[in-house]
Amino acid sequence: MDIVKKNEPITSEQIAEKLNLTRSALRPDLAVLTMLGVLEARPRVGYFFTGKAVDTLISEKITDIKVDEIKATPVIVKESTSVYDAIVTLFLTDVGTLFVSDDEGNLQGIVSRKDLLKTAIGNTNTHQIPIGVVMTRMPNIVTVTPEESAYEAARKIVDHQVDALPVVKAVIENGQEKYKIVGKVTKTTITKLFVELGKN
Figure 1 (cartoon, rainbow, N blue to C red):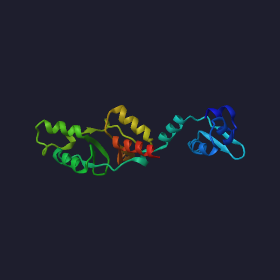
Figure 2 (figure 1 turned 180 degrees about the vertical axis):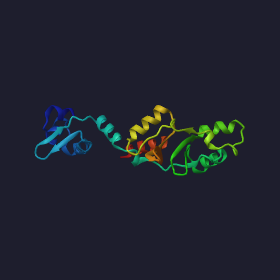
Figure 3 (figure 1 turned 30 degrees about the horizontal axis):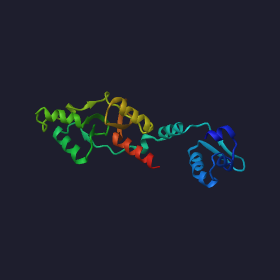
Figure 4 (figure 1 turned 120 degrees about the vertical axis):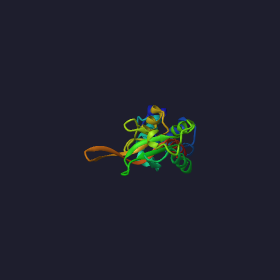
């Protein structure tokens, strides 16, 4: 990159000569830098530096990925569900967070593994207590929309120290703004994305 910056336009033969390498040995590196957008290749002219650093390009890539592309299927229960049934659902579906909706699929609350554990340890009758009593309610829920970036979702998870975010779409019903649950983003979702980006 430094050689191209100082000598642009410069051919692959000239770069190879300055590095004491063969042109074929250099070809994969030039291909990667060109694909990343760090260098621009012009036929019969040579290579130019685009002015973009690798870390800037990685940042652009992460902010280009939308929540809609990575969201997972949420596990949704009703507000009348008992704490006992919520705990069973949590284990059967192997998730850490349940989303609570009304009959129209609008977000009413969110309940975590920790919320349920606290209630169960309190020796209360988990069969009798509805999940609505222990859940976090709107507007105290951090949400994310399908159009937001994966980076923004990850930032919200870290900033608010939560395990999962409901992915919602705002709708107006009877003159009131409500939020339809259309997915979820969790720490696992972000980790999977990180691994996928590493693979590629």
